[in-house]
Image 1 (cartoon, rainbow, N blue to C red):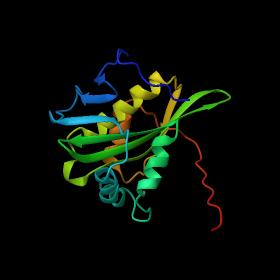
Image 2: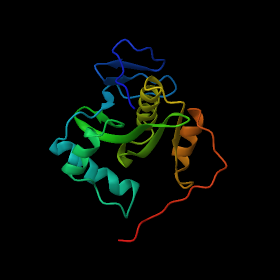
Image 3: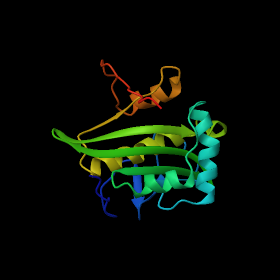
Image 4: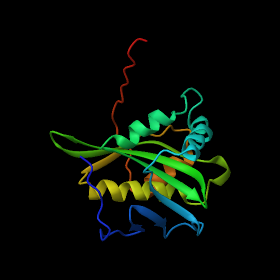
Length: 176
């Protein structure tokens, strides 16, 4: 399962301090006030941020409630990364680290950066923080999916070292 990262854990492009990350991405001009780190508590501001961000990711998915977010934060293998500019949440990413018989693996889900703040390195800072966390948790691989229409996101993931896999992705939705 996910292990907490020590304060002195080595990182290359992100500086960690008390589970709070100040982005120092080399390839992009990141705003000086950008902070990326794991959410630790559910606040009204976090709930409101999800209500604003989730529709930018999916027109059919409901925004999580405060109870949903609390359940996520309580899950030992789930880390919810939050990017803030000043005090405003401008992006989120969910990382799930889990053990299977062959290795520790990680999965990135629901990456969304507010449309008004794109092209500022926020998605990159969120993804790098998640990759660092997954590495410190012992993950052998980190997977994610991204719709082909999200061209900028796909370019980012490839630039960060993700490789397109030739596989079939199946989804089962139980009857409701």
